[in-house]
Image (cartoon, rainbow, N blue to C red; front, top):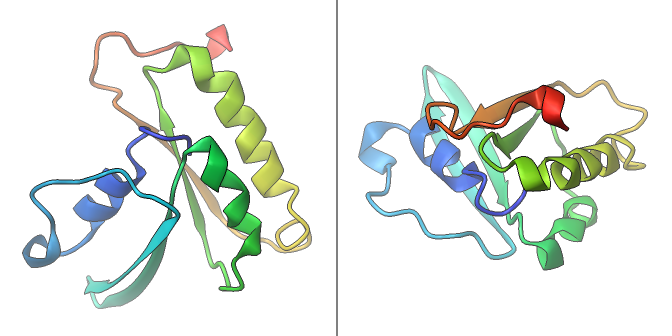
Length: 120
């Protein structure tokens, strides 16, 4: 997702309580988080959503087993930008031929100014 969509916050909430951070800072580049929860081992690549770092998605040589695309549901102005970024990810040469599950995570839905998806 784009910057400020809540990707790092989501990763923080996925981690076991004892590994969660009390303060979450914006990610620069990407961070790798490894943890076990519910008897499953996770290796999560938390990618920066800033424009200058978005192209690094395809430069990584790690294998992807799933993608979580986080969208800020209150940011109706940049919803089209998020859509374009998602299309680039889906059409990336390393992913186009693979059947990788993608979870679309609409973040901040409890806020009153949530954008209607029909607006985009």
